[in-house]
Image (tube, rainbow, N blue to C red):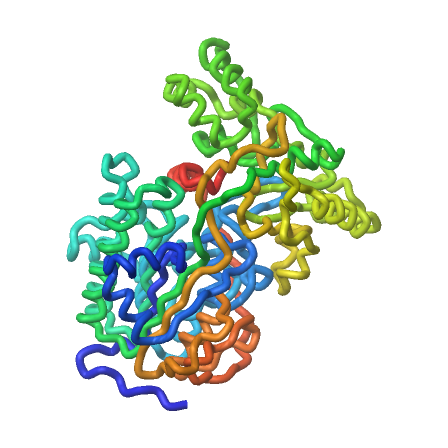
Length: 542
């Protein structure tokens, strides 16, 4: 394969721009209004098309899939939470069990700069520089050590997360977009990389917070376009690839509470104050995740507050919103231990249930298998029969107006394959057209209005332009797993034969190579209450 000559002014051969949740539904109005001329020029002058995401199409799992070119069954991240038996933690980079494309490049002597990519904290060593993105703490470790301090000395403030207390949320989010661009340009000037990867998260977060706030959305995208323009002018990359992890759009159907359904089917057992899913209490008191009870507490107003909130039927993160409306959220948070708040709500009793939904964004049901889970109740001999029974039952579920809830209900093998598949759900449940909102909460009714009016859709977007790009060849039926092979091919580097994608048709493939399996074995806890709170605020933790 022939790779074009490097620019005289810059070494940057390939720039990958990650725009979280970008898709035609979001971009077309911006293009029509001429709000993002630089971004639009990449689409106009190169080639583009839909980019099919994965199952599940959520940030914490999708970006590792894009970065490694492999499905979650290989890299091991299925959502924002990792599980050890019935206990949980927020995922981090040590949960990613495959090499990222910048680590592959480093094996070939190619340097990279990576800014704000989710699930990259704590950073692993490679040739280049990295500032972590989502699930990192606000002051994250970077690579190399001391990098964040140098960035702040150069550009001023740098935040991983926007100031959620700001009155103008669009401006707060766009400030973070500006910081990404400024940090990226500082790092490319300092490290002189051949590959750069910058990710913008605010383009997703605003839709979880204020999906109808057109001015905030436009403010964020206008700033993104300004930063992209400056990067292209300063670094002059030979090739530019724009990609999103998933799409975004309205949910016009129902919220389906799968654990409530499974409870009525006799599959889920419940208890008050057991080891259930993360809720408002555990998010506010990180030391009591596993449901340990406080040993001393005087009964009083906090107990009555909890009882009042529980009376609404709220058993999850959104109990905080109820308490806030009652005007007693600060009081309860200050005085009620997590065990007390847990005790006020009905939770899935993991050890006693045959199966359950652990986290809604996993899109599936986990079976409480004997020998695999700490207190499994389903024997290996019963496993397939129980799984088939649940699959058949869920396939038949319809909404109150008679529409199917699910477009697919299948064994996990249909979507996940690889050495980390054991950590997946056993049954994958894909909402029909992603119009229905799945929830792990327990309430008195199986159906309700979606907790969020907009959420993730399966089709994202990809656009490619550059010296090594043949626009006439197009992008074909592009998938998330094709991005890593495409990036590597633009740099003349064979991609791992275990990757699940191929180079897009518009790029001459560099072929495949057998790489030794990633051998990282260090797992560290995230255990960061601030990160958990932010995930809960965006609806990722119920």
